[in-house]
Length: 136
Image (cartoon, rainbow, N blue to C red):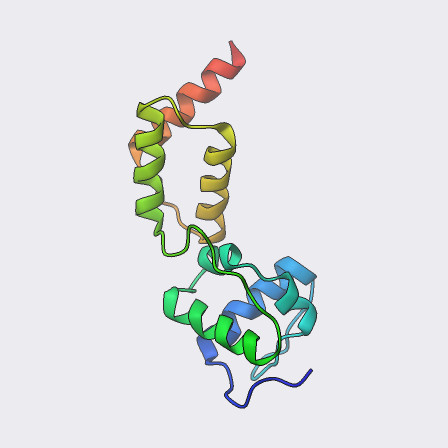
């Protein structure tokens, strides 16, 4: 696959190396590397937004680089949300009774992908109440 003339930064390559294992099972070599077309086609903006060490600037770089390779990564409707914003939104939804199990699972998965160990106490309480109610 022929890529754009500009090479990816080391951070962008490292993010893509981690995602390559998750999305395609591909083990990238150490050092400089060009992502496969299969990986670029499997990428989504949501996966980039949730990837460890992939901030908005790195995600933008990867999206632009992929476009240079002829692959379009559609923007996320939720792009730019930090974990703290996500937790605050979920806690607010729970207080109004509008929190679904799918949202809770997605939030925990995002936290795991980001390798974050910080889950707000308010969300932990909601999670415990939900688990207890499912066992009663």
